[in-house]
Amino acid sequence: MAKYYSIAIDGPAGAGKSTIAKRLAKEMGFVYVDTGAIYRTVAYFLDLLGVSPKDVDGVERYIDELTIGIEYDEDGTQHMIMNGMDVSGEIRTQDIAQKASLVSAHAVVREVLLDMQRDVAKSHNVIMDGRDIGSVVLPDADVKIFLTADPEVRAKRRYDELIAKGQKAELGKILQEVKQRDHQDTHRPIAPLKMCRDSVKVDTSAMDIETVVTAIRNVVKEKTGL
Ligand code: DC
Image 1 (tube, rainbow, N blue to C red):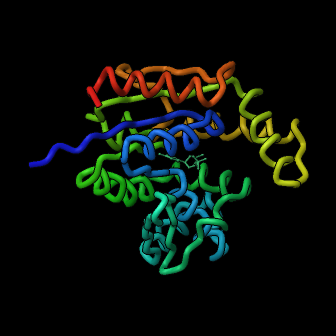
Image 2 (cartoon, rainbow, N blue to C red):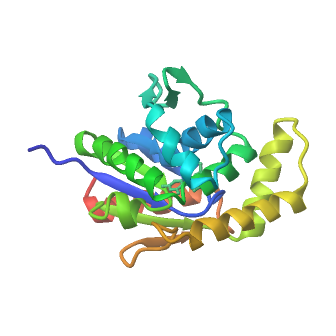
């Protein structure tokens, strides 16, 4: 059987996971799987139905009516398909991020998504980012990275991103949201965000993207020979 490599990148929101993972995937010819987008798709679906992300019964009742597809275009960009509809743009709001964090705490949601994530890794070389990739989804990953940064730095990055897009933003409010999501993601009973014993920790607070990519590329080379 062919050997497929897997690289797990976990960490809090805004640490730079997706930027770094995308870059590495392109460079190495791996498939990039943004698992947060899958949780966001569930949150968006429930939101459209008016189901609160905290309502366990509602979540359990409607989750079976959702079919999620993951597609990739020629340049490797991931598209999320919700019951046949591309919702990749709709899921990228702060509101849906916050709801995804709440929805992801339910056992039924994590169970449904677990196989979906593992299936991709069974037949592709993958770089997967999320919160529980190294700890739960791919515990045998060839490389595990824990990417983090101070909450203030992560909030400022998000603020700069929004301002660059010409949107309104309030740094204090963003920092509060960052801290709230960190708390929810690290304190839930099932598959909380945490660093694995065999993860390599990279704190990006004082690093630019190029430096982070080079550092992680070197870890990958050392661990896999690729
Ligand atoms: O990475 P993101 O901001 O798109 O993730 C949105 C939420 O989804 C995050 O706050 C928690 C949840 N999530 C998770 O529980 N497990 C993952 N592997 C990825 C995301």
